[in-house]
Length: 439
Image (cartoon, rainbow, N blue to C red; front, side):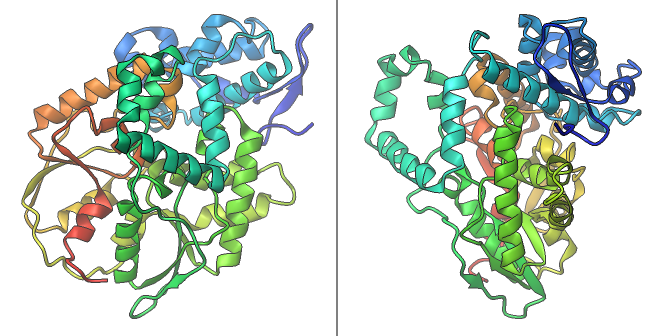
C-alpha cells in the first residue's frame, strides 16, 4: 500500500482497520503557539479549543497514536466542522500543512466508513453522495440542472419548501443552496476562440456547477482573455476539478477527475490553465500533491499544476486596454479563502477592480474570514454555515458597499440571499462590463 503523502507510513493498531497515516513530523510542526486561532472561522464563532486548528491537530495526533478512537463522536464532529479554508496555514509561522492533514483525516474516515457500515452516517451524506455523482458525470449534471431549473421557474421548489416536503426528506438546506440555473449553459466543446493578435492559448476550465449557474462569469472570462491576446479553448473532455470529492475524503474519486483534466490539458495545446473559481484553482494547483505517489501521473500532475493560474493572475499580468465604460458604485471585495489563503493571491483582483472608472473600493471588515460556503459545507454543517454567512453579511452591511465583488462562485452563491438587494458580482464580470461590446 502506498503512503498518502510523501513521507507517510502505514501503521496498524490492535483491533483497528489498517489505515494511511501522515508522518508524525507534520503534526509535530505545530508548536501550539495559538497564532492560528484568530484566523479560524469556527474558533471565532465558538471560542472552543477543539474547534480551532491547534485543537484539531491534537485530536488527529491522538488518533494517529492510538490514544483516541477514530470513530469517536467528538473526533468525527470536529473533522466535519472544519471548513478547510486554510486560513491557519497562512497564519502559521511553523509551516504546518493543515490542508494536507485535514484531507488525510477525512480520507481515513471515509475509508473506515466504507469498510464499516455500522458507523453512524455522516450528516448530509446522502445528499453529498448524490451531488458528487452528478458533478463527475456531465450528462447527469446537465440533466439534473434542467430539472432543477424547471422546479425553480415553475415555483415547485418554493412550494415544496413551504409545505415542509424538503424538510421531511432532509433537503431543506440543499434546496436553499441550490443555485439559480441559467437558461443557457456553458458546455465545453473543442472550439478555439481566436484573439485578434494571439500571444498564446489559454485552457478555460469550466468547472461543474458553474457550467449551469452563473455562466456569465465564464463568458466574461472568455471576453477578457481574448482582449488580453490569448486564444481560448474549452476542451470537451475536461471534468469537475475534484475539490468537492477531496474535501469529502473521497480521494480516489478526486484522482480520477484530476487525471481527466490533466489529459484534457495535454491534448489542448494550451500554454496556461485559466480558472475563474478560487476553489477549483486551489484544487488544480494541488494535483501535484494528490497524484504524488502515482508513478504514471506524478510528473504530468506537476507539469499541469505549474501551468494553473487564477484568471486574475493572468489578466493582471497582461496589458489590457483601458476600460471605456464607468461603473459608479461602492465596491467591497470579499476575499475567497482558497484564493487568499490556499493560493496566496490578494492583490491581483483588487488591481483589476481599480482599473474600472468610477469604482470606489471600500474596506470590508474580516474580508479574509470564510463566509461559510466552503463548497458543499452547508449540507453537513448548516448551522455553522448560517452563522458565518450572517457574520459576513453584517460586515458587508457595515461597509456601505452597493456591490460585493468576489472571485469564487461558491462564495457568491453563499452570499446572494443574505445581502439582497445588494449585488454580488465576480471580479471578471465587473471588469468585462467596463469594456462595452469589445472582444
